Length: 428
Image (tube, rainbow, N blue to C red; front, side):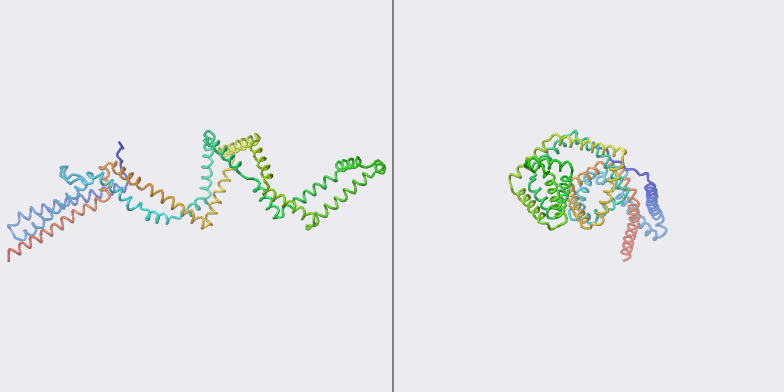
């Protein structure tokens, strides 16, 4: 069984309203007692003068009207004088029916799709999120809160099968990537932007530096010497040939580097583009690249690298969460603040956020409105009706007591009018 809900009336405002209610009740009771005393007095004095008949008629009807309205007000909340009179204590006796009707009323009139959507559209969620994120203290608090959650989330991911699932999914996605068209497209863009020319210059410069080194020249000279006839070796033709070769290569490299339209550059462009075309269309190239990809993904060093990266990342996050370093917290706080600034300046994005949240909240409320109706009904059914009635009386009881004043006045006037009509009819 659900424990009845309780209400507290200890606030100064409740105490003041309760005192005012007691005062008005006492005044209404005094009016009722006064009309009754006036009726008795007027009846006793009626033999002395006929005018007391009018007073008695007014007082009698006022007393009856006051009693009737007292009964009506009391019967709304409890049984008059504690008597088991039918159709009294109306609120208490109909608690469950009132609860069900209240829940259905709220569901039918407050949670319908049209009014809910209209109300949600009045809220600028995007601006609220932007202003919230732009506040430096809030973005810092959000970053700190996020950091506190991250270590636990990482631990949960490690102890569950989530990491295994993610690893398998990532590996499967990488295995499914066709690298040949991707590499061809990347190289084609590289050539189109002219960035390969800088690479060509770097290659020519590196080859030239390698050729002009003493060790390289000695190696080339020795190779030429082995191929020359014995007669030419006597005249040291190998040294002459090496110098000529190096001089020619140097001149060629300088010409290429200094001339942006050198034929060699055009030839290199055609060669690179031809390679790119074959890379994107030749199955043999695609097969070799795919095999290289599989071999790379199967390497144990790659798994060790991934584990080391994960371990270092987790260690860094844990140190950041413990306050040992503030780098990540400051980065997150700055990122949140910048996101708020960007959102504040992007009206289209804010409109999309508002539209999306209206749809989400509207759908959620539509799905849950029957549950809200049931929840409200169950809460009302669980209320302590004695305390609830006290709460209602404290807040509207003063106005209800004025019904008793009005009942006495209207009843008295009606009685006076009827008595006057009776007297007039007698005279006629």
